[in-house]
Length: 332
Image (cartoon, rainbow, N blue to C red; front, side, top):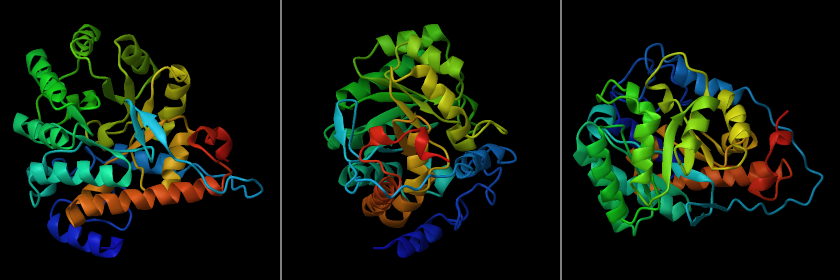
């Protein structure tokens, strides 16, 4: 399998839902929600890509950083690369259904494991979609993170129990799903989040943070990590790109909890930029949909290994021996 054949296969399986464009920038699929596009004009999706692309890299070659180390420890797990597969579900209405939820979750979790990354599973209108991901994580001895939607409290507490029973490394909530047109859920108050987080022994990740004030709330209510995310531009039109808001959020948290980011990350150089802007790790979404539909777990692993190798090459050419060496000095 190679990238070309993977993309050809994905284009056939995703026909009518994703065009597998040469550049995944949200222009051709604007407004296609359900589907793979961005909400409304698609500006938030495009802003993610364009904000990240606007940063330039300082090339350095007079140094001894010849064998960069990309290892990171998250939630008690040693990873070979600072990459997480984003929580994605809704294959039938977002991706056409060529893969069912079990097959998709298997591709994500196993593809991440074999490439040294960490996979996440998601939630959708039918609660069975969340459970499909949890079951795959259980089969992988807990090597994955299930994310739930901000449902009512009783449903959330039940979802937490299922994640605990699966032995998951952590559990998360994409709070930014409060605006999705495909599922009727709402925001959560500080009191509700405190109740949820105090109800589990698992590290709890809040995904969908786009402001310093909400990052501080996440810390206050006990989050073990946050994900700076606008849900791939799929919930609110005209938000800034995640790369625009990341630096001030990371600075405000000052290393107290890990900061993960998604939005427009397509290459290892993009990963380098996000780490330089203050992230501890990145989440990859749409590229792994193409990878999974094009080649299952093998396709996901192929794309992630390619990104990791690109990151290492970028680290060599910027003089970074470890992930800790990647900071704002990398950026022009």
